[in-house]
Length: 404
Ligand SMILES: Cc1cc2nc3c(=O)[nH]c(=O)nc-3n(C[C@H](O)[C@H](O)[C@H](O)COP(=O)(O)O)c2cc1C
Image (cartoon, rainbow, N blue to C red; front, top):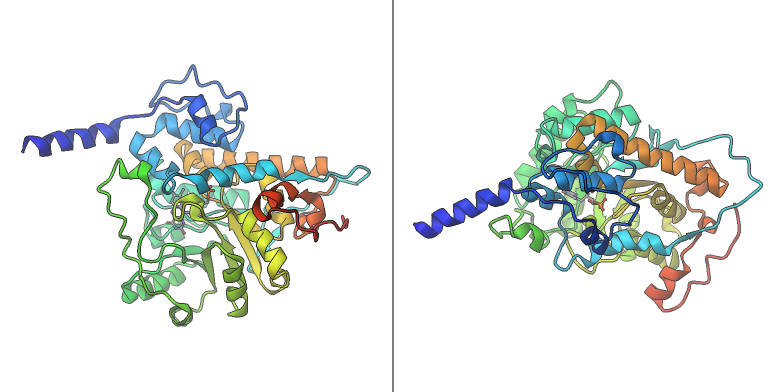
């Protein structure tokens, strides 16, 4: 009995406790040193929204404000978090070729995703439990996405219901919805029908954690330890094809981690595929989106004409968006940044999206090309040889054409 009470007290203390931000620790965990000074912050309180200069600053604000448990649930990664760190680190290895003597007076960020028009080539990716950051939960993300003109695809493990989230949409706002492969097929059928009825226009079908979720030490310290997700263990291409017949909405497999699976989805006739290692939360050691895309270029270059490709993982800067676009991605997902920014509510998420947009526009101007269409698939803007050297043992020879 005494042990149980001690356990309960410990659990409650962990739920309530708050981290004091220590920037040196963050630099070790992949964040860049951009001079954020947290010495005046009081643990448990929100800093001033006006002090948020970059997407990484929102992470620190969330760490300072949220309970240690909730912050950890957002921040956590699988096992040693190698993939989590690599997601952040990979972009530091990519160099940009910027061109002088270019007219950068006209800007075009307009991006179609599955034929729907959006104002930017980035979107809010599905992430569970937005309500841990703010009572406005997913509704804040819907509204912020509407005001920024970007896509939002809520998680099926959201705080709010499918219907509540759908009802928060502005007139004409297009949203997709994420779904998991529940072992209970009736549940899948029921949720797909509800998603369609609530007005969502496509499904991100997450295929990277069949059966179990990743083992995440950081969050296991706050929970019971079970990683049983209720997802099916025997999801094959046949199951995938059966699932496609359960809805009239387009399905986009999310959590694709190899060039082989990108090609498979293209050959199966999907309209789009979503390369993701789930923010380093599932397989520790899974490659980053950049590396998978290099493999697609090397092995199946034809798929870029066959299918739309989305990607995410560690995107925190306008330059990260540009690197993925140049590698052929149509649109880039943001997982943690919107969740962290949501500690400030809708206004915080809007500010975060605006910062990313400003960075994107600025970098495009400085690099001499302000039309997003000219970036997409144009590898002459980037130098990925440092990544290739590490990943393949030698640079690929195909990325030498100059065509800007
Ligand atoms: C707190 C959290 C919850 C997530 N929940 C889901 C989910 O329910 N379904 C899903 O497909 N992906 C989920 N993801 C993965 C994201 O969709 C996305 O792939 C990943 O976060 C991108 O990496 P980033 O956080 O570095 O941007 C989650 C990610 C986080 C951080």
